[in-house]
Image (cartoon, rainbow, N blue to C red; front, top):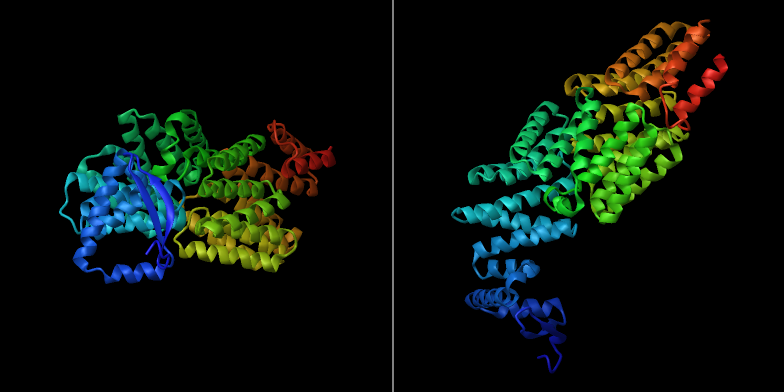
Amino acid sequence: MVTQGQFLRAAGLELWPDGTRSGRYQFRHALYHQVCYERLGVAQRVHLHGQIAARLEAGYGTQARTRAAELAVHYARGVEPARSLVYRRYAGETALRRYAYPEALAHCTAGIETYTTLPPTPTLTSDALALSLTLGATRLATEGSASPAVEQAYRHAYVLAQELGDTSQMFPALYGLGSYYRVRAEFGTSYELMQRLMQVAQNAADPALLLMAHFALGGMLRYWRGGLVQARWHLEQSLALYDPAQHGTLASRYGLYPQVSSLANLATLLRQLGYPEQARQRSHEAVTLAQAAGSPFDVTVALAYDALLLQMCHALPQAQAQSEAVLALAAQHGFAHWMHSCDVLHGWGLAIQGQAGEGIGHIRRGLERLSAMGVRLMRPYLLGLLAQAYQRAGQVDAGLATLAEAVRLIQVTEESVIIAPLSILQGDLLLMQAGTAAAMPQAEACWQQALAVARRHQTKAWELRAALRLSQLWHRQGQGTKARQFLASLYGWFTEGLDTPDLQEAKAVLHALA
């Protein structure tokens, strides 16, 4: 057939690790392959698959994992499911390292299904555990941490790790479960799991586990009950423990580079704490590191957090450009969570720049799709962006109703640090609704509440915004000296980021009050 060239064509020679020289051939059309395959009897197919698998495995020896995908299929069709399971594991892990998410998903799903048909042994359970962890990391990237499928994969891994008594494998399962509850804003449950992570890491005295535990706690505490200062410490500990030579493989186990996410989280946290220059530097480091690693998921995460940082700084053109970059990248790779989150940021940018109707549409769509995915993390903050868009559109009642929804949610999730910017915006909207004189007492009460919350959580960025509102109000009320002293003391606290919009506005107000 090769000589005549009707069905097959020669595809060169291949040298195997054991020294075998093998001719390679290809069917000229997939249909020819299908017809020839179906003309074989079932028993003959099983026999040939088994022979091919055994010869490949022997010929490649210690390098057999490089042919894991082929070996998994041949052993499955050769009715050797236990051997197939082993190579499904290797194929899934390899696919995840290459960011070939659909391929990783297919191998892991097939492997776990195979495991359910076999009598359990410690070896098979260990392979199934590894498959479940890879599946969890794959689904986390493609479906978002809030997906029930993520929780199912990591819970299955945790059960298998308990059966084996394998603490090292129990750790990534706990991490995955903690991430699931964090993104669903079930912070109490997430915190309990993260504390268990830290206990396991400390007992093991393993730097890799410790850095992941610090990263997990820092990423969670920055939202819950305003624990920003504590979160900063954990994230900085995680970064201090990271050693590229030893910890470069963590991404293949957890589905992300912890250093990238630690830097990205730290950037927006530092911005709120009043360190905009440090925030910019950390965000730049996160993006640079993610791009160097070549991971599309980590690049998406780093760019998304950078877009959020730019939005917090009211750097409109840059925030808009970055959110559009994330939208394109997330759509290309199917990272739904980040795509919908940045659709909200994109809509906010449109609204602030005068396209309120279109912007509101983007924000509402992003919020609806995040809600459908089960994502509640940062929803109060994103609702605040929607309220700002309504403000720009002159829809005051809609803005106030949106803020009320955000506050009700905070009462459940305890994402209390967000109360400060929401209260500032509420005061602004009340002034628009009732007119300056009538609404001044209510607006002042909102800004005082924002000031108190910001001071409690040490969020100098929000404290400055509240102080700007109050000092301008007091100036209008004839209390210029009080306004100037109050704002000057706070402005003097800042030692960096003097070119940011809030600090430039504060400088201008102080100049007017002089």
